[in-house]
Amino acid sequence: MKLKSILLTTLVLASTAAWAEPSHRAFVTNEKDNTVSVIDTKTNEVINTINIGERPRGIGLSPDQKLLYVAISEEGAIAVVNLDTLEVVKKLDAGDDPETFDVAPNGNIYISNEDDAQASVIDPKTGETIEVIPVGLEPEGVAVSPDGSLVLVTSESTNMVHVIDTAKHKVVKNILVAARPRGLAFNSDGSLAYSSSEVGNEVTIIDTKTLSIIKQAEIDLPNSKPMDIAVSPDDKTIYVTTGRGNSVAVLDAKTLEMQANIPVGKRVWGLGMTRDGSRLYTADGVSGTVSVVDTATNKNIKTINVGKFPWGVVVDD
Image (cartoon, rainbow, N blue to C red; front, side, top):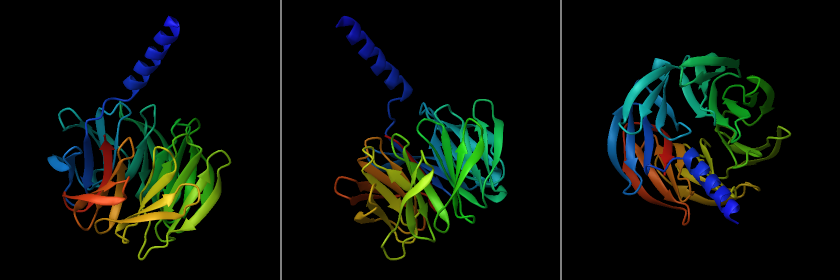
């Protein structure tokens, strides 16, 4: 009994060490201001602004939540921000026009280089480019599977989801989807992936074991142009920003049937979610705002003014 208790305590300590305590902040890239807005997620007020570099878009956190990464497209770099000081500590060479990225469990950063039809892999500790992987034209969305074994990249002009084996750093499958695919997300165990298609106005479910499409469905909303995607922690619901539709579509994660539609700001793009799935933060590009959504009620509960053309969101809460 005593040994079992010790083992349990050890497992709990290991899990908490791997995932730091949240700082209760959201970070938003402002594409036209060259800044990142810092939002206190307890008060939902802007508490700081970081001068980050030219044309910030994709944004994410290091696995230990101690560093913030921002793709600054016009500089061909990833800016690295110390989250204790909110200072840019270095900039990593990220290839031409880095747009979005995702961070693997081992810390490597997988980046879409829109102008070069490639995905770059960099080690943020050394700044070294580990690999450059050819993909389709105008790569956009990037998502790393929870176990780090697969990376998915959407290519807007080729209309594909490219599946990369991270052990080989090679594309092992090209999956044709609806026109102009954008966002990507995995469910919690990585068995399913979701892709949004802006022009095709569809969401696609991919079985990551067979690398085949399970289901595709249109979003039946006026002016809908699906962009970013988030999956609820219980894997039952997906949230999709609809771009010109100015809303977040709430879909059943298995059937893709619509459960709700939540109005937010104009030209909504990026989407961030709290760890418990209780709130969403959306980047409302044309409005220059971030909308806060309560997922229990599917209501927009707060609108926060940020910089010009907010693009990406990451939440540490």
